[in-house]
Image (cartoon, rainbow, N blue to C red; front, side, top):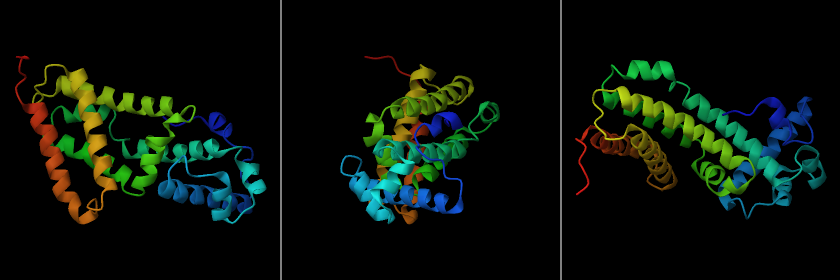
Length: 219
């Protein structure tokens, strides 16, 4: 979920209001994003970010008190993109999806997650995996995932083509499976646009086969 403006402001020392300040603010974030994507969270320092952005370390600290504040601001932006990508998956979407072929609904969910990873998959990995240790990051990511799982569960409970024994568990498995596989694909050299249709097709079939297979009792 997106942080309220008052909460996001706590990550910053200085709110950019003038054009020059906004440019400096943007340069710092862009430099941090490039370094985090290339070097990872632990190996990136504020001195490196300042150098990459072409500003003094003192100027950087005027805007951000530490590296974690930069990471949280980048996460704000990334979560805003995530919310936009998944904005269609609301209660109205579930209601429509109940009368839509299951394969089409799965395709929509996968396409949304692929779009989320496309711009900068390596930065996505840092923000969603390495930076979980940053205070507040884990809770925010969990809230976003819980929202997505809850909507998926509602879909599985009511869709006539879904035949899983426990829709709640199935929703968690499907969301985590899609996220993990799309994420892994995006980070591979073969995760290029020309490979997307084949990968997408196989992932759709994987999820569809799981959801539509008759449930079996454990042996």
